[in-house]
Image 1 (tube, rainbow, N blue to C red):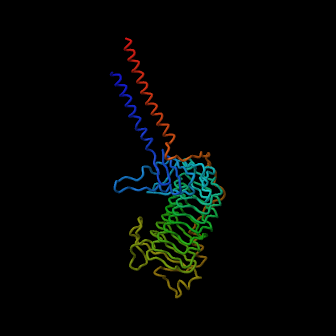
Image 2: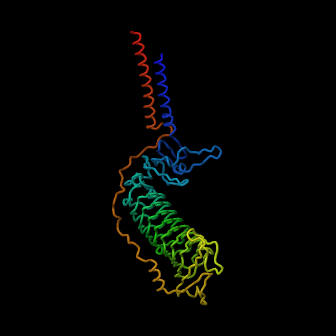
Image 3: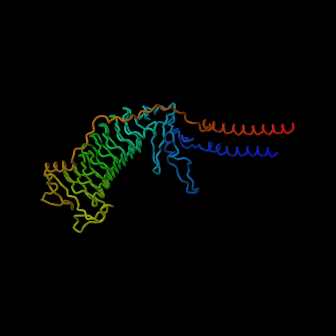
Length: 455
């Protein structure tokens, strides 16, 4: 009888041990508006589903989150057969970072081209199919030539990437496309490019030179923010009409900025924190320079106007909170030079526009010291400020690796009404193990009773 009790107790322990595993397998499943999550795989079943998964809320009454899983739990992303558009969002500074991206059979919008997930309806690059491998590459030179748009966050946090060759078909770069590409040192953008989205190159610490061609019409807010190594940027050939907020914020090595003839506005904090910026060259007439446009740019001493006069200059260009009594200098409020007295920059104009700047020989314009300069002197000053010519980047980057990955298998989205195969297999194995253990116990008990009877 004691032996029987031990066997029964053992069976109960086995069942107790298997119960949590079965429960966990059943509970690792969640669904929402346009998405299904199971065992680390997120399947997007309809447009808007990814956004719904990424944005969840905290219930103030219960103190609980409205969702059990977050982007941190996603290892594989499946683009469902009914999805025609998809973009990665960001919530609370967390970003979807799957190891792989698959496309469900029957999807007519998305395809896998040489390891890249592409929306063929819009010719937009969404990302790499094998994200875990591609993120470690130093050189990428196999982006499909049919691509016209680099999608939002397509290469964000590719922290090993040093060189990338973009096809000449590219016309736009989406927001945060290259954010935090810490090793990207230089970039030649294609001639076809017309726009660069917000935060596209934010925090690209190693980026020292970037060439923008004549077709560029728009750059976004914070496009080159915190590019701490950026020494030279070619804007004077572009067609941009505004320099947006923080578009070149905290570019610590930027000393000279040349703006195009098309520009009409420098927005507030556009060059915020460019501590070594010394010369700004403006080639447009009637430009608006908003308050704090040069916030904390305490080294800026010369602003050149090669055409006409500004339409408006803000009263606190440097985010200053106080001025000297004579109004010729301001009290710096920057972190490095706080409290120092900094002279306001001199505004230079060429002889061709002397009648607009100083019709009666004035030496001041709206409180700023002004000075006439010849075109030859201006050219010499700019040449000196530029120093050595910027690096010339020609041809294809040296190929050190290939981003081509093996074709990814397609996948079928799980049915929310049917158990996952892996989950079912695990449950069956555990259940069979428990049954087998019980059977063995019964057999042992029967054999002992028979042996006792024989004796």
